[in-house]
Length: 178
Image (cartoon, rainbow, N blue to C red; front, side, top):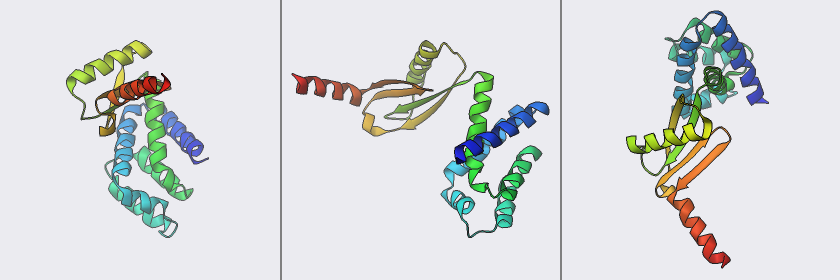
């Protein structure tokens, strides 16, 4: 339910941004909000807390995001008024996804054993182009040492697993089957 509500808020904000020709500005705002909420567990706890008054949440959010556009500040006030402040991060994430979709940007999530190098980035971009036919790609890298090496690529519903751990598991299965 909350994800659907976040989608509706995000669509409304995107439509308003399109009417005022400020989609790019709001995209930056939403990236900032999403990043801030991802990094701050304390802020997420404040937004989810039923104990903290709505007005206190509003004041905190408007102070934290004081450099954002008026549309973003209006969104914050609307979420506070409707007692939906906990949705702010999901609304931002939904807006980013809707914006990328409208711009034809493919978002690729890459899991690597170490931080992504330029060599691996080139391979990943080539694989994304092969899988989707799109040159317009944004990469999000996550480090997970358990994959040992290589990478796991997710683009939408597609997944390409070129990890060492996956290859070792395949070999293990072959030996156990024989």
